[in-house]
Length: 151
Image 1 (cartoon, one colour):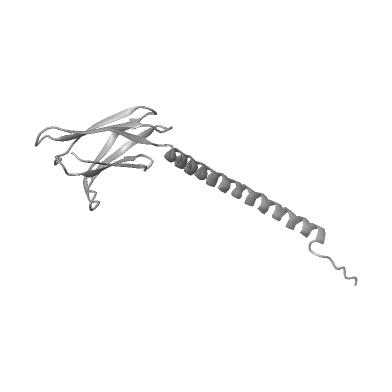
Image 2 (tube, rainbow, N blue to C red; image 1 turned 180 degrees about the vertical axis):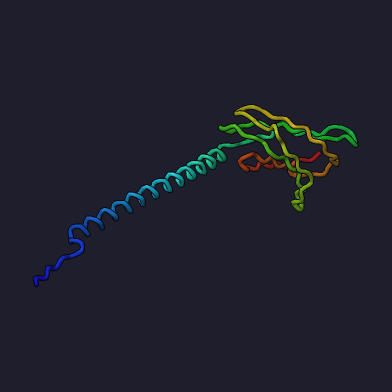
């Protein structure tokens, strides 16, 4: 009897199978890392753009005046956008400067100011003559502009 020794798979065939499986895994890994990189790149671009625009925002308090008689007193504020980008005023706060306690907060819905334009808002507030308070304006990019006023 003659015994013939055969291998199940030749070394060339097993090498080809290993190389092709490594190539498939490599292509999948490169595709995944590329999509992951593009996603992070877009997030980084958005963050960079938001922060650069935030640096270019600037508001000048043109005039803050107090009017009316009790019980219908009000504060009128005029702001001018002196920055290089448009902005949206989202909130105006009156804060006690001594203890930082919020006196009044008003949300603004139509506070868009284009470059070099002004925005005025009349706010009902029972102010007391001679009592100073901080006036804080917040934009949609969370930039704060502060000044102190006294009726």
